[in-house]
Length: 207
Image 1 (cartoon, rainbow, N blue to C red):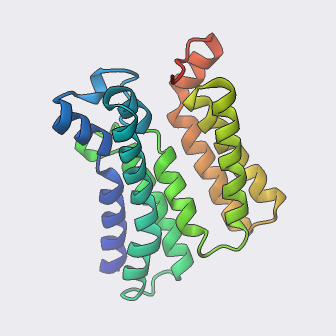
Image 2: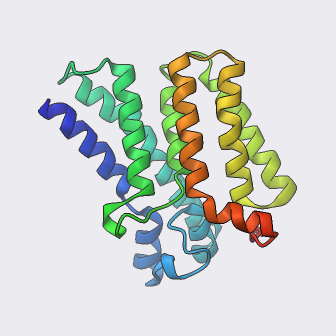
């Protein structure tokens, strides 16, 4: 039991690292929560820091999810038999996403979880047959929506909704389809304000 607790805490704390906040604070002396959209994520970091550093934030946020699923799960699986490796990977991936969304380092107000969720999916693709196809398709949904509207939140919401739909369509394991619904729910909850602005036609476009 101590090992599974250590695994959960490690993954949560890794996900909790507020990459965008740290980059903006250290490089510009700016609190990202007080500029742009106020979101502690890669999109707002891109607005504040420019595309190159914004992409660096994006990659690091993706890695938080990927490392939790692939490396932390592998490390702790050899030390605990509380869960099989696949279920442990899913648990730690969800912990990483929760850490990003509700980081204790910023009074539990973090990012939207899109990049970290994508990293989790990339890590799980090594363990779930057919998931790579679904990842490719939701990436296509994200890209096509963004190209058409230039609104990151709309692209992210569209991809999140597409995830469980494609998971069911391609008959991925039922347990993963259930997880995909949970991830979709996380995204929608974190985008409540964006959904309101979209409905009002006030959501900003990324130039």
